[in-house]
Image (cartoon, rainbow, N blue to C red; front, side):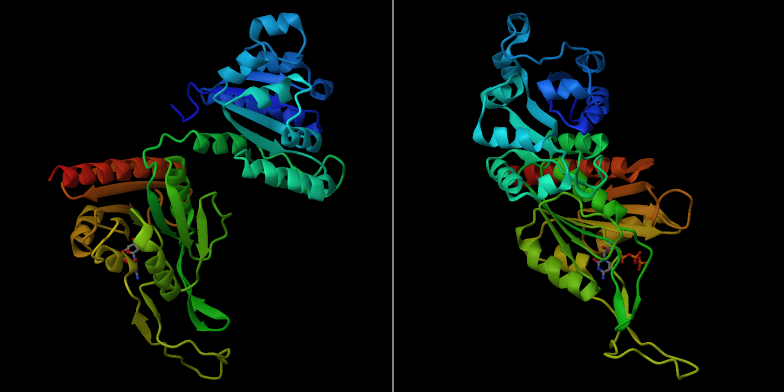
Length: 406
Ligand code: CTP
């Protein structure tokens, strides 16, 4: 099961070289469980044959507005009503302009006019065309009207230029739609997540840090957004691309992360401390680069403020989830942390083993809360994040309905 299972998607293909990628997109959407009906503009049929889409979607392809045979099978109004979502991929600059002014001079534009479903647009065009103020204004206007704009991506273009204007990769489009159709386990809730390492400055060029990659925290942020939450991510320095969530704040040191989290936590329903916050920081950071003129050097480190404990000690605290990384006796340490930091849940992973932990793409977790625990066996961080978010949603709702019934 995915969020796309059973969803009905009209895939509009317009006339650009990226039209061939819509074939792969059709396959991915169907694999994810969606039903797909393809509507092509006349120009698109010059790039890819409708027969390709017919074979891949398992449905007849729609091309003509005034073809009586097509209209009697499933006309533009029925197609517009059938759709849970109309996705235009690739969308040319011309089609975006027509969508903006509301033309209905071919089948696809008419479906867009007639549908009450959401519309998503994945632009693909030459980078100068994308940059053109007319296109930019059209895109902004569509976005203001609630049309979701997916991409474009940056890179080599068919015309030989390099820049912004490539169609997002089909898998990425599919992921975006999955989040669009999120199951709503956290709908209406605000989730604050910390991720990545912190850097504790020694002098202007040196710092102490750790091996956290931020992958787990970022995957949790995306999974929470897919579950319908309003997500604010506070992240230390990572090499990762910012996830598509409501707000991303970049910080460096544990002290900065503390200030940032404490300023945002009053509006959070759930706090997930996935960051590997430095436990100690140099007592003072030199304001000039330290020269290597001494044989020995002593650094005095001072304990940082524990953000997680500060959050859980608030009088009006959010549902608070902490992480633990242990090399041994994982379950015991995790349960101790639950009590010591008075948390609602602890997610613990092994470090120094093959399975999961820092820098890895996979992870396995032992999760405990007051009155229960479970194992989430080794899987990709995306899958583990999905499972943990659902567990958090379950416990959050259980706790709140218990409070309500008191
Ligand atoms: N944490 C925090 N602020 C700190 C240090 C840690 O909020 N200054 C949070 C982390 O985000 C994580 C959890 O606390 O959720 C980790 O707990 P911690 O006690 O730091 O674990 P360890 O570093 O494993 O500590 P110990 O070895 O002492 O158990």
